[in-house]
Length: 518
Image (cartoon, rainbow, N blue to C red; front, side, top):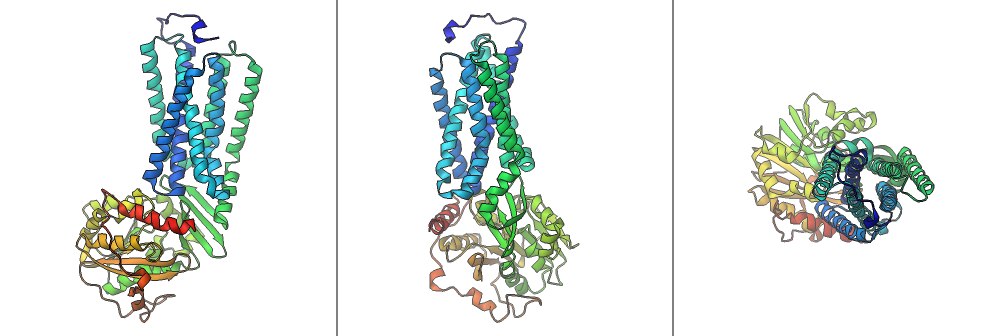
């Protein structure tokens, strides 16, 4: 039956009828589900491919283009519109709902095909989602005049998008994880198909076949939802190799702790943060050249470093009266405070009465008026995306300068001067651009290779003559060697990394990308 053959009806003056209300409610659900699939693809691509701005822009752009294609294709659906709508809902439910699970498994088992599969799924899901609203509008126009139809459909569409845009980062991902969130909304899409089956049961040909398809789709999605932990374990065990002892998704990152031949290892969004076997090398090199050089630091701040390892090293100095740990993700500080095994790795440092934990964005924290510090330890992840890259800009270092005492030292972990030579020296140039002196040094950490740090200060840096007891890596005799750079790590000309350009993120991606490609 074509649209022209549908019986003409006069809009009911008594207001919306049950069928219209049900379909408008479906628009709300459809919009919410469509946005979840879009956000899931964009978030996963930024987790696994880095550069969040690029990934979100390209994924959302591709998704919107595919929706446009779907809307254009809807013109070719002339007959049996309820049946077409039902089939499309089931396809969206299956493909969109399974999208996060498929991508997680692909990243673990066929990483070379991940990007192609990612954009292929985005195109398919976007096209199907683009078909949904035009079909609903053409079904609704039987009973609703055009001006009311457009306003009502768009209102419910935008409300669904609003609800999900707020719930996705604050509730859904932290509570359910990415895989279960996708599957839950797949179930909701399938429920819309079941509702359509009931509403249009008298118009549908082969209603029994449609009912079987709805049942099978719901059964598959619900089964996958209950087995989501097994899917996650299957993917992450393959990706991380070692046994996973803890995993969680927060609004900010995916936290995974493994245990294997190298002891415990911490991964954030798939990137290694430390390995128990050699983390002492990294953290001794990060903390002690600045702390020991100061002499008797009393007030210390740690930006990042929610695992508490840097705090452990800082507390080796009896002069320290207070340590302020500024960590964005409360899940991190809670994990390394309460998890017995992980808290033991940092010597239960985060439970010390000298330590104050502040869970907030370090950039915003520095902008506030507050105390100055004798030593500031900056232990952020590498600048893999613009959200982290802002913490390596001249704007950030200007704020850091304000919170550093006249005789104080700030030390910044600064990626590998061997692998990412230009990235490393970009940080030095950026620190110097705000009037601070930059003193670069490096250490070998087997899990990472040759790793770099930079001390920022108002006064020239003077190497210490003594170190606290209990060192496993550093000695006063070997410390000067860390400040010597061989030719393949020597300084190269670089630009200042600014908020307005963030050249460091692009440079970092190019340099480390070459390594990953080989």
